[in-house]
Image (tube, rainbow, N blue to C red; front, top):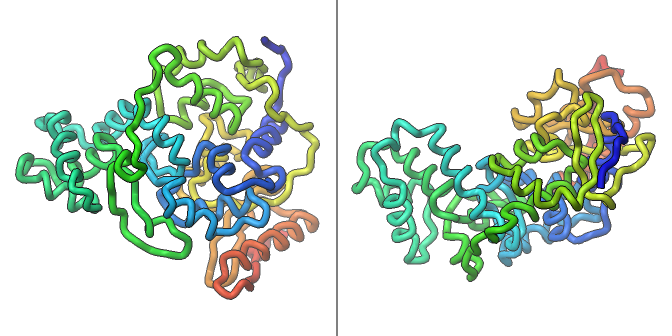
Length: 366
């Protein structure tokens, strides 16, 4: 099924906002939201709470904390070798097909240090250390195998073990609301009490393509690669292509999508939304111009928290005590400034221990 319709950036923007639960807050559970989003990037442990607050109506951070403690969501290395908060089901389903990418990305950093290390032997040693069920930090795990490989720096051994060779999860209380804790690891299968299945041989990655498009489409195949970090996806895309519709973007490139996924009218009003650091609404694409100007593209990889106004990155924000500090990237209209203040006050109240907070907008931008 194909279509010759050309979708401009505003149409793609509204589709992204709808799929990412940013066009209106969703009446759904935190678990359902995490699944819809294909996980949330989470190397900063508290950021997923901010991401869900902007997406789920009446979001209670205790709900997400409980999901983590109850092992219904986990923190693990997946897409792009970054720590993601994903459902337990997705962690089990996706880990094997990410393995080659994870290993390659660690080697991209530590190839020379690990040149004389047999990675199969290193993986076996890591599994053996963790077999006693005792959680360990990356440093502790690296030191436990360092007698066998004394030459590489412990950091190289540790990164290869926890980010690539041994499927592990970061245990709570890391990632629990308002708690600070170092990363301690156990094997994913031990934590969940289930073995990691091998992906089916016939349509490896086909379900991942469907899930990505449901959360990010319409999208280029390059966008899928950028989000996942995976190569070798043409077979997966080919397997699902008969199910899909296609469009063209402003540059004439082919966009793929699920036929019945939401593609709102480009004139649909978009509310102000405050996004956390490293939000996948930006990082989930190779071409991010549907949501951020090229001039500000680097914000998405720098860990800067951004504010969407009319669906686009129009400001950055920080939190100083109980005050949300907003720095616009362009001049805001009076109506936009009012909307930013209203949403910022709600965010400040969410973040403040006492439930009260304020907003300050940098002078000179209105």
